[in-house]
Length: 305
Image 1: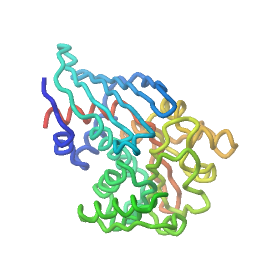
Image 2: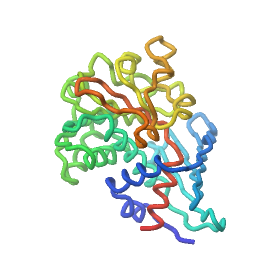
Image 3: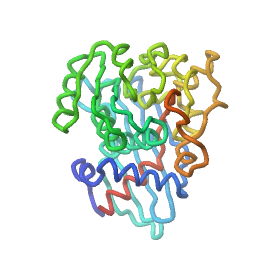
Image 4: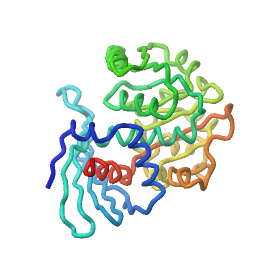
């Protein structure tokens, strides 16, 4: 059985090829039972995410520790087991943390390929955690991103992300005024650990694509209801959205959105069953809850690298 480290996974998953691998996976036949979520403490969550297709089966385990920053450790850590689905033989164990970061960013970029304006050049990152650089680089692989503005409640972290993105060849700047940044944005990516609204509908300009990943509980959100209510909304999966998409569920409870108005999921977008962006003026929104399909596609790509 092969073992792939975080650096091995990173080398095997460049963003544009990973986006295309996810596109093909969403067009194919993959079984993804809803993930098991356990609250193991006040600050800890464990997730178990299985998936399989004709060739492979896989299981990802993830821990989310909201107090790990004080320990100098990532808040999200994971591992992935890839299995030959014909023989049942374990094939590989790989770093699930790097796998998760890259597939999550690539899924957002895949959605943006259908929902963001073709000429989108300014990205606003709301959040400066471990996902931030991945999201910037993944979006830049799909759209002609020329400027990245990073907002974070701890400004020093935004400065660090800006430096990292500069090293990767992107013009990036840490900002302190999110409202002013959003006035320039073509794409706004929420990658925070916030439980209450940070991205306000009143700040969203026409033509913006809003991309939400940070909140993963039905009681947490990164946007206010106004931002959701003004947008044409898409999700990665309907099941995940109805179970965990707090941004949408809370907007519905406040009477500014209905889950019945979700326009489509990633599989429907990739298969051409539903239309993505219809005009340059409309606001679109993609809410990601995460799906094991993405992990399986990424793990198979690492194994065959």
